[in-house]
Length: 349
View 1 (cartoon, helix red, strand yellow):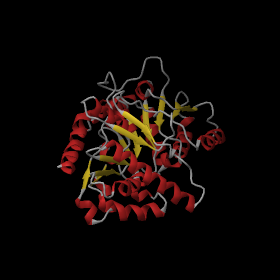
View 2 (cartoon, helix red, strand yellow):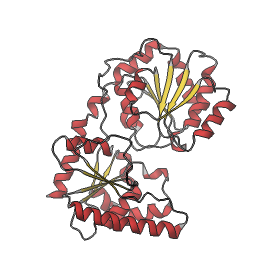
View 3 (cartoon, helix red, strand yellow):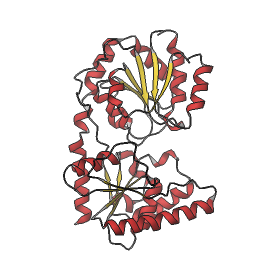
View 4 (cartoon, one colour):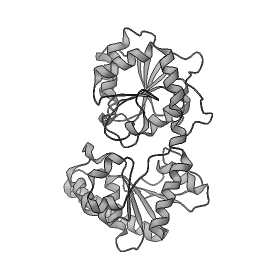
């Protein structure tokens, strides 16, 4: 998302500097416009204990403050809870407006308790707090809510948008999912659901794109379910739309989300989409029964039932896929970036 925003503004002759914790010489996975100034600060260091974590983050505050002073920006935008906390500390006293952006629903409890406490202490000192859905606002104090704004993620539209669902000719019937291989994404539940319908749909396969620490556990689970020949953990891709065009059905099996870009992108490609109705995100994108299907959170049997129905009903898949493409207009890049620019004008003025 950061890359999308940076590239959008660089193309409009804004001077954009991207600062990350990554090591020197490392390039971002998502490509940046050549006009974007990229500065890795070399502070992506794992902490072995609480004291080490405190020292690492103190170094980050000092390094980030120095980098902001050198850059002399009109506004700073920070992404992610722990980085947001560090950014508030770094800009204190500099007179630079700071917009912090929450990327995942805080109710999910993914952050250690200390970061949750620090977030409550520091967010009131940010110029604005951006959240992705209305559901997240009650997580914050009245003081923070008054300076909060709701901005969904923009949808990256495929180069040749589909007007209706349809696979690349000759491709196998495929259930597609995509995301980092971590427990949050619920791929273990997706494997269990697919296992329940695999025998009744022998011509279908499941492709999961992404990489992460849960790969070995997911491979073992697929073997235990007897699905090793029909489930493929395909790794990372920088061409998600090419992958989506070859699929027949998209599933988001997450336990929690912020605002799932991949769901929007799949729908923009004309893919019929099924998602757990997890906290934040999917229900803001999918209109149940109209442009996709929502399944109660964590209901593996319910997910299997919906998969079985859609796998055997091409007509329903096509109808959902045709309606799904409307997300490209609802969450279009220009529409969403206009909201960001309004906030920037507010804090700069």
